[in-house]
Image 1 (cartoon, each protein chain N blue to C red):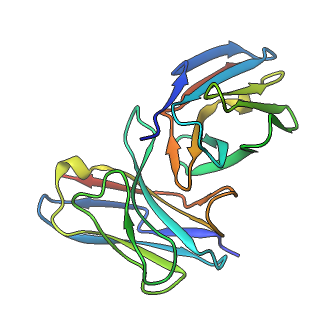
Image 2: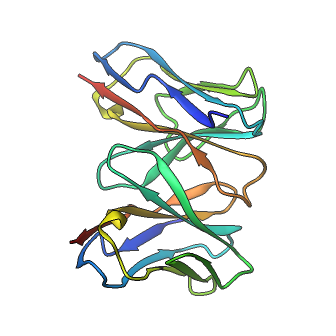
Length: 113
Length: 109
């Protein structure tokens, strides 16, 4: 049981490049979330999904797109990376609507030059 | 929009001292309040979860209280150890988590 895994662990991009971050969970969780964490700030919700084939915007969705084609995977895409998207990205998942704790992945560090 | 504030931002104490970390939130309509630990360069580890109907939750040397009506939660860590050095985050859950910026704790040996 690997829990929540994230790929890649670290990436450097040039402004304007695109990339996809992959989050995978093997706990059969319905809900999945993408957050970003910047220095001196708490985690901020980018997008989330309440089930396969569904996605919704969080607090800071601009510049990101997501897809949940399979229940176990939640993809975060950056179509045209900007330096303001330099951050640490965390994925999380949970069984149901949120009366339990979320399980977090180890994070992806992204540097946009 | 839920706003979560943690005070202080940083705390340094000698080993053995008790720690008191504060968290406040603006909207009391929450399912639960959660406390996480984050080590440098790592992900988040869940410490305690207090349901909205509960007043406190305990795990070992950790105790967290919740006063939903006043929008406050406090995390107490008894007899601190150097291994407790980390950043502690609280999050208010109203179907999605809203995080505070965290309190960075240093326990000096």
